[in-house]
Image 1 (cartoon, rainbow, N blue to C red):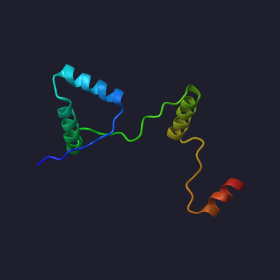
Image 2 (cartoon, helix red, strand yellow; image 1 turned 60 degrees about the horizontal axis):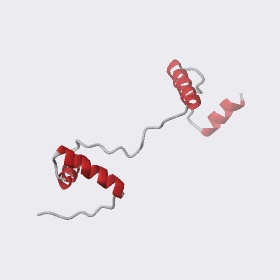
Image 3 (cartoon, helix red, strand yellow; image 1 turned 180 degrees about the vertical axis):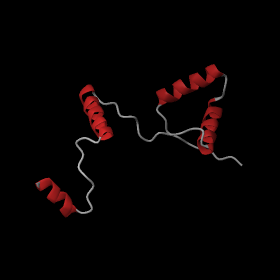
Image 4 (cartoon, one colour; image 1 turned 45 degrees about the vertical axis):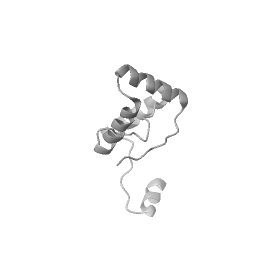
Amino acid sequence: MYSQVIVNVDSKLKSRAMKKAKIAGVPFSSILKMAIKDFVDGYLDIGLFKTEKFNDKTSKRISLALEDIAKGRNLSPAFSSADEAIAYLRK
């Protein structure tokens, strides 16, 4: 038994996808079926979050912070309560 799926896609994106499928010699509907099957079978991973692209200044600050963490520098100790943390900050 088959079901019909209707999807709204940008027309330019659809056109590009159909041209690429034609070049590959595969019907566009087969591409969609394969993508759905691969997704269900775990072969197609959909990243819901894009990788962050930081500017140079932010990248440098993050690198320095990670370096400090690796070396155990500029870190406060673990606290078991808020009062303990406040007392540490007041020292």
